[in-house]
Image (tube, rainbow, N blue to C red; front, side):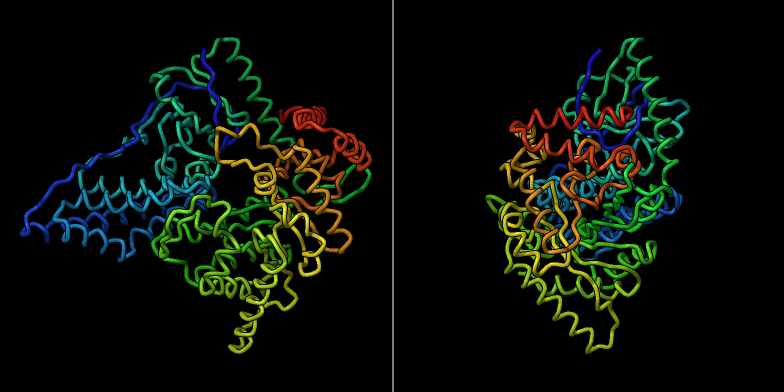
Length: 579
């Protein structure tokens, strides 16, 4: 028996025989062609694009509305990329200028694009390279005549094992037979992970060398809750996990029963639970899990995996779809978080030595006003459809906030001149995710309508730990005393200024942090939709006095490990099934 630890990206437990599938990593040699062959190769490129669009369109249409909404969003991005004339022209120009084959031109151009994503330190963006490689493989399949391994004819339950999976590969899995997924590469925010969650298939990624130690036909356990994969388990281990799987299913059913109940502590304190989303179709999932609205709408997906920036209409349609789902419930739209550490299609940057400390988020927007104004126009237009709020990311000082607000007012004036309606009482807030913002929160609160604490970046910047670097990942913890004291400072300043405050980082999604956040004064949490029931159950199981007592004890501790263990033990007593 061998146990591998990876990253849990789709919850659940599954046991089965593994099937290792080919990653289809084509290697295309450089083949020179004669001048007389160029037109033939150019036509082959055009045919490959046309067939790839047809194939992907059929796959997209095959998705059901219930399970395939978010998958269709991903496919739509791929289709926009394949339909982009400038991309096709760049490939055909490569054929003409370098006198190379269609296959080599496709591979060269798309791998140049993928390299921009791969070299980025931000894990969310670097994981987008997998989508570019997926498009490359789709085109090469048309050119080379190779067929993707067909898993559609399965007649027995299996665990799929691969070096890395593309979203379209994952979407093609038959859920009746594919019971689990394990891959060497990937991350929590990769599109393949998103598809696995949409399909409800337990998955663990980032297992590094798992494909080298497992063999086809081995019995494998996928623990999508703890991020564990067990190869050739003992009979005793199998029995334990079968029981654990039954407990997990029972817990899900139990928690679904409180969907319509409010998140209220035993002594009557109401907590608002909002959802974090990236795609418009995720809005329904927030409602289904009992969410009160959207506390963080990440808008980066509109920009990524495409050769051109989204138009104002594309922005508007995405926001309008989400706002209509919630009507008068809050929808907080964060302006785009792009920058020098995130490839932005039409703009090319020399690599920065420290991209997380460089031109990113609001800094990037303030230097790309046309793009920024396009998004603001769309958000304002959508604001008349419901309770929309705008949130600026990574504000580090008052000047940045005032500049962003001034640009927003300029856009409002433009809409007034064009007689375009928007919500004039729209609230404008900021994400507090740097120590500088936390330490000057009292000043920023005079200009902001609300705060949302982004604990992911706040932890990273406070502790000087790159959260995407596995070499220092053990040092990354929101339970560190320095992080907790900064969070307390922000909460206190928000209360003094009488503005709303929420926590929207991963800290809000983890049951062990619920009590201390309530004890610190937080009354609004924004988290991933699937975790809303667990967090709601914790809230409904405690009193505010319980939380206050716990918080006083924790703030007197000086060790991150001591704090983390104390919080985890307290949460385990309340919701043992989650641990």
